[in-house]
Length: 499
Image (cartoon, rainbow, N blue to C red; front, side, top):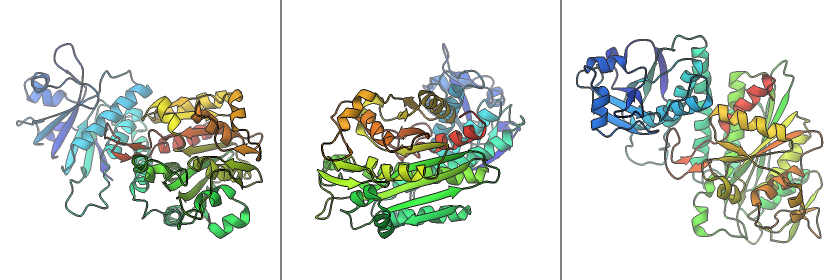
């Protein structure tokens, strides 16, 4: 990952390959943001005019490059648009800085070093810029056979607030969280032939043990013996059997316990309810929820947050074959409730049900499940916004606020009681689908059925944001690591008594 250094020096004197400054929209030319003063002075006050002549407008994600022309030791100047920049201390400002830094980092691919002189006023600004840089500089080239353009190797962060109290700690936290996001992205991007439930479980185990976390893996024999009918049913059509991974972080003096449950379908063909071919291309990302919860608990442990966290990753491959479960089969979820499987492509909720029931046995204060669960959520919210559902309206509002502060777009959705009857089954306790109207909400209602009484629960449907078809800001094309930042911030909020 790109290394970060801090400096209060003027960008003109640093020995780097490129210098990045921020610009915002103006009435005529762009408005130069704090951090660009020494460069503008060296160019005799002409920087804004030059950028305007090159077509710069200051809009978000816009990058304009020009030679330094002797104004700095660097040979290249990079102006990145922030859009209208909100006031200090607001999530909107932090997201603008994060996106600008990410866009700049992507544009700096191939450079060895750079100085980033965005308007950093305090530790929150600094953390946002560092997240943008380290997330924007991400690249997945494991399968490239030739030379590829490497991300910028080192960045020096410059700004008037670099010496502010708490900046070093905030930057260190940002680097830890970004590393977790990028780790989740890596897992999502690995082709499904190389990330089966077994190899995914091995990778999760290796990561957990590196942080001295407790880890347990149930293989197909243990799952069958334990009655995990969701995982067994979904996985029985594949040559690659399912796994349930449990990773536990137990800090001393922890007064609260949070459980994560992640959907880990390493490839989703739809099973016998086969998807159209075009709909399968991104289905290696159907394990994004499991990637998020495993990466997040590792980051939480590294940060030393004083909350106990248990992550359950329910891993299976959903394939059609002679042994696959059939539409109209009835399976028994862990704990004893029966489900009529009317559509084998509604498989994520089946493995999550196993995980949610098992997580409830630990008696946590809060369960958060994360899943690329429904296309209906994408229809409702688009490709960049996740859905939030909760068994308590106030909890849903708090999760929404937390996600906003973490920099992830999420939106609360209801769980209308009148939709529950859509899931009624004539022969089992519940069916896995209802009708097409409100499909994301019905999926949430299904999951709610498996939450133990007295436990707060929230469901994050990340079907849209988990995999991007194009790069923007600090988001790459491919796996995005969706929900990792929110999960980490949620546990910090629990530690602080906010949740």
